[in-house]
Length: 158
Ligand code: SF4
Image (cartoon, rainbow, N blue to C red):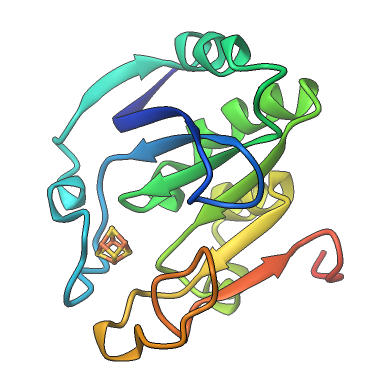
């Protein structure tokens, strides 16, 4: 099983709490005005990479990292395959943050089993489209004020 990958950072402190590896997934239809990762909007951008290869790279960063972040692009467009990677990451006791242009309400209402299955694997969701008019005063780890950092282990959604 493969994911279309736009990029990978072994360890970074800007995409969530603590030192984390970040996986950027290719492809996004949200088309936010002022998108900083415009090249990653293309579903052709990047490379097809085997899940096991990504997992091995993540594992090489243990014990330095406390978790993994999915970003993009729109990670939820590859929800089926990403859920399988997320399960492997959880086996290593790493937490998972995920950025998405969807709101959590949109994901829950989608009735898309793959998106819902991915949501179940996550610890933290940073949700909502980037809004360049709401940048000032945005929370740490978010790009604009409308985006929320949702601790999925504290909210009873399923
Ligand atoms: S969701 Fe992210 S990658 Fe997609 S268009 Fe918006 S800012 Fe760009």
